[in-house]
Image (cartoon, rainbow, N blue to C red):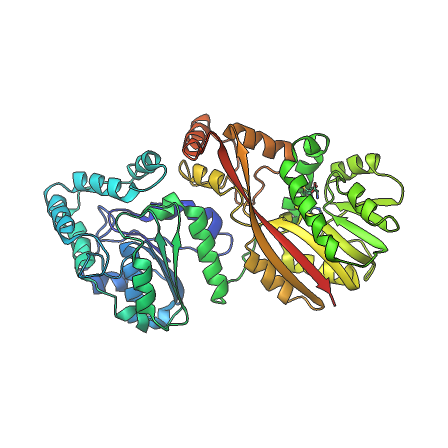
Length: 511
Ligand SMILES: C[S@@+](CC[C@H](N)C(=O)[O-])C[C@H]1O[C@@H](n2cnc3c(N)ncnc32)[C@H](O)[C@@H]1O
């Protein structure tokens, strides 16, 4: 259940839906007292609103509330605990108006604002919008999107909502919420100060299932400003709380066909732009320095053009080298350039056409992020590795290309950038796989580009453009592209545009 805040409506959640819907049933509501022009049949009291929300909710749900919606979620957890599986507040203050040393909006500003709502609600809402986007890297784009929301005059109900903001004080009650709770704050929030982090932590005290996180680079309007990082935090929280069930995705096989086709097309030009792939692969080779064994069989999993074939064969001249990739075009290209003692296979890493216990060393660089079922992948690695065998790999984590994702988020709510599994899902899958142990480390690689178009061209040439299942079908409009380019430009630093790669280095040992 996603509960919006004061002065907005359910549309504010839309950018998160592409990422949340593949694994969660989502209900959105327009809340009387918060959404302009939305009324309740019964008199609008807090208790009637909570009852109305529960009437629209499943028998048990995770309640995620933004701003005043966060306070409503906490009220629901306190008053209807059997209906609430967990609570997440986003940019929400347990006591909205500052009091003593408790951080919040100044009382003067709040009362002045209430007067403005009474006098001219439409103008007051517009002013409120500017307060919400303050601190964002792309305030103008966010304002334009907010201003598309309906603004019907509804001063009475909006004043009731402001009354709740003025009076709700949940500072003491947070610690008595029994369910897992997560409080997400925004570092650049000018309405709900991020200084609250320490205050909430102290109120949660010893509550073991309570967490507070502050996301950098977001304003108060986090669902529109940083939907990717917020959706990521939600997913991590739900996994950690043991409530995650992966949804019925569209067939991974279909998606794999698309991945294979895209990399096949890219084979001939791939090496000319694979700067990051070279650096990361070289670093991965260094990890082998500590491994003293001489393997009889080396599997290069997701070998691409076979670039690392030469180096692996230099290291292990007596070994049989096996290059395997899902993309036929890549394997054809690699085979034409490979030397003696090399074999090449077109196959899927999640269903290896190899005998059990037939491989001593698996080397895999920047390929496994395309595998969406880590439990299948690890089961296959555990099966084909000989006892005492080793797999070293690199993959990409969810923060990869966060700048591009945020720049698109300033324009629309479609998924334009590939999203990759969080490390906790890899760890959980490896822990469930018998006979292997896995260790992971993450490292940020920051690439620099003169123009956003250079990054987009590079992704296309690599064959690694957006292939996520929830991406939007059809073409992106020229206007949306222009908007994204402008939003990205704001990140220019010392003449360059940064692009983050969240690289995961992993080692798997077979017992
Ligand atoms: C970014 S390239 C990396 C290639 C090479 N390892 C390198 O570092 O240059 C990713 C490769 O993984 C392959 N790949 C993607 N999904 C795969 C899967 N399920 N099984 C095997 N290979 C896969 C792609 O076809 C592509 O060639």
